Structures are given as C-alpha cells and as structure tokens.
Length: 364
Image 1 (spheres, one colour):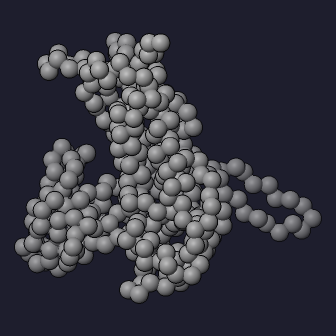
Image 2 (image 1 turned 180 degrees about the vertical axis):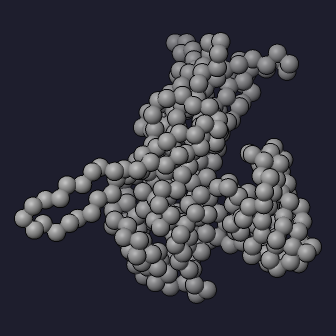
Image 3 (image 1 turned 135 degrees about the horizontal axis):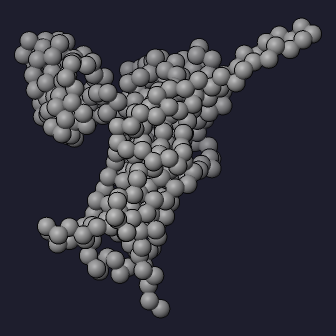
C-alpha cells in the first residue's frame, strides 16, 4: 500500500509529540499558554499563581480576594530548525520521516528551551546553596533549607543537577534512585529520586564550564551588537584575569559558551561566544559568570514558560500549527528558488519569566 502523503499537518502533529516527549525543565515549571497569535518581541501579560493567607478563625471568617497578580513577559525567544529535504525523504512514511528529520530537529529545539529555562533560573536565583569541596549530603539539604526559608510549599519542589554535581553525590547515603512516572520520556530518563524535599533530576543542559582549567575572572560587564558573536568586556575583576574557552556566561537570560581564551587588559577585552546576540546591548550589563557547574533548585511557581502561537505565513498553503498541552509547533514547507531546494521549517515562540526569585536556588 502506498505511503500516506506527508502533509504539514501530519508533520506538525508528529513534531508536537516529539517536542513534548523531549522536554524536561519545561514540564517542571509553571506554564502559561493561550492560542492567541504573537510576533517576536511582543510583550504580553500573564497571571501569576494566587497566594492566600491562612487566618485564625475567631467566630467569623475574613474573605480574601483572588489576587493572582500579573507580570509582563516579552516573547523574545524564537527557535527555528530549517531542514533541506528531497523527494526521497518526502516519500518516507511518517515513522521513518520522524526518525530521520522530525526527532533530531525537535530534540534541538527542546534542548534550547531547557537551556533557556535553566539559564534564567540560575541567573535570577535569590537564594544560594554550596557544593562542598568534599561533598556531603548536607549540601543538598541546604537547597531544601533555602526553599524552607522562602516558605515554598513542600509539593512541586525540584532540583536539576548537571552530571558534574550529580556524580559527587550519587554514592552517598540517602541519594538512592526511586521510581517515577513522569509526563514525558525525558522526565523518566532524567529522574533520580526525592532528596531532602526535592524531586531530583539530572540534565546536561545546566550551565557549566567545560574548560579544563576555568578562567580566573569572577565578575564583568558586557555590551554587544545584534547578530554578532562577540561581546565587549569591561569592569572585569581581577583586571588582568582570564576567561577560558568552554567557560560560560549568562547575559539577559541567554547562555553563551566562550570560544576563545581571553586575558583582560585593565579589565577589558573582546570575548568570542558560540551564538548570535539576539538584541543589541548598548549599555554595559552585569553577566552571570559560569566557571563551574551550576544546579538549580526551585519550586514550580518560581519560574514560568510562556508559550503562544506564531502566525501562519501569508499565502503559505503548506503550513500548519499543531498545539496541545501548552505547546505549539509551526511547520512550514517551502521551495527556495535561489538554491532550487525544498525545505521544511520547525519553529516555536516563547518567553521565560521569573515569578518569584526567592523560590529559585543557585546550587554551585
């Protein structure tokens, strides 16, 4: 029997399922979604989870309004994977096409979403906990303590560990794996167990330096131009310190990896990074220096992933948006007359917002 024609609708629905199964962090934070269409850079208002006070009952009740509060969120994260395809790939059935094209493309997008969430969480965390030089289980208890001090509810506490930190603790007592039925395959694969009030997971998307010997600079500011891969560094401390290839930095919620060693001169220099700067930074901003591995402890209501739908291109007959469970994926099939090749693009738009920084713990 002939294969079913691969339409944008079929591909988009498959892409949505793959994306949902590959996400880890996105399934652990507060989610906000509506089917309204937005464009890159739009600012929308989203509701924050409601808070109440349990009052003493002394004969009469004192009613409380449902004041959820709201925060503005910029929809500035536009992730795209565009793939050149041939008639041979388009003749595959959806199972084989998914294996060859859809799964690798949406896995890359899922990784980008999780990296963004962890970067914002670590950079905005108002609480800290320390990984000891000789790790002890009390280190992880420090994450639970920080959340206790913030009066975080016991339910929906999470701790996301990179391998470098996880392996320091996984042979210690009370760090045993327990079974967990998550909402996606990525969750099930990454779950470790519940440790000191926190459901604990592992992820290589956590901010972490890969330098054999990390740089010595502990603080600096940067400016940069949109669509370039270089920052201008100022106010570096120490003024003659180093930033090494593989070190990372978080700027305005985006995680960058350094691609060339830099030794500062009077606290300044030009820093090369691995990806384009999404918007011009005209005035110097502080960066979060990542010269070692960082884990993130958090309560679900500390961080939000806000998703909306992108508009279908005008006149594009071969395009479709699939949405479900707070996610939306757009698929557009096109023909490039310049290179005379067929392409399929997968893209999503989202924003990330810290809702309560006291519910975020930088564990490093």
